[in-house]
Length: 198
Image (cartoon, rainbow, N blue to C red; front, side, top):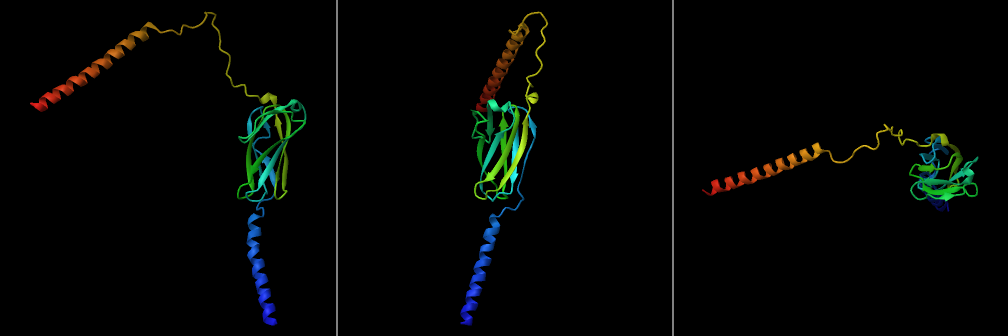
């Protein structure tokens, strides 16, 4: 009877020790937290939402929720490469799917087209771990206006963009030089063949 109990105790301890590494492999290695690469962006400018503390390879739901107007009228919110559409963001926050890496981390690119304040959170679909909300301010004053300065007008009408007579002359000279070079190559090869045959 003592041998049977000892064998059961040994088998039970081996079973418990054998399952410990499997549990540790999926447990989040990092504390839950979230951040964005830039807290204030221009409309349509891409930034990266990062989060950690999830299970390795866990599927995630990332939610972008509008705060104050003018985002209430609708915005194009694009995340990753899978979604871009005009939606009434006050009525329905935008959600995206992502997957945590082997360390339980995620980096997700997002762009928002309308000015306003937005809150971003991520939830692990298996663990229930929630990170965020992180606040992003989309400022209309930071809109990309890098189209350059307007062209100055000189009052002389449009510039002449037609062919210049000097350009035509140099084109003819260049074509003549090309033809003369090709002819000289032909003559040199013929001479070399006749001398080799003689």
